[in-house]
Length: 235
Image 1 (cartoon, rainbow, N blue to C red):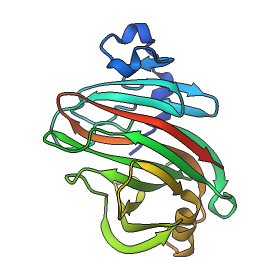
Image 2 (cartoon, rainbow, N blue to C red):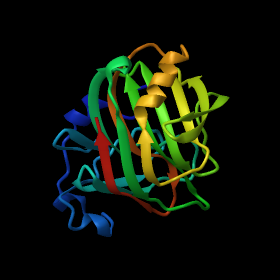
Image 3 (cartoon, helix red, strand yellow):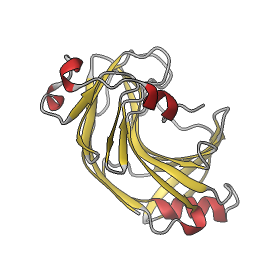
């Protein structure tokens, strides 16, 4: 299930310009780029921004960006089950776990919090061997969403404690790391997480391809703003 990147569809879809979007929320009015196309994408240097409205039963979603490190979305998805979208910033590494080096990322996000009609998570999505293996690193979420698969163990990696879950989405294995102390601002050391999976024999020595950060949005009834105020990736 190529649900978060959908590169061929995204690259083939026409991009909406800022003038064509119309009803974007206030952060987008002066943005460098914006789109309300469900597959809208924008390349900024080595990074690509994706609106990525991939799930069924979706509502309206608009993305804006000043750069890969300052962007956001306004989303109005109905209060129903199933992930509607994964807007994200993506970088392709192209190195195996054994030779990936010290990869880490820092970010500061603003999110709508919790409440009725709101279900989402803030997560890194790290892909191995194309889309054959998926590592999800959840930093923050609402109480009505959860990872694929069952709880396995608690582990300290890269200076943080994580609850590790493992499962399969029908297309690829999913390795999920849930922060025991949720955060919307901080640093995630990606290399130790990938190496732990390999050293534990849970994942082969895959090539790490896309490293993405964004929100899996299940519902955001009434329209909510999500934004990345700052973001960096050290490779």
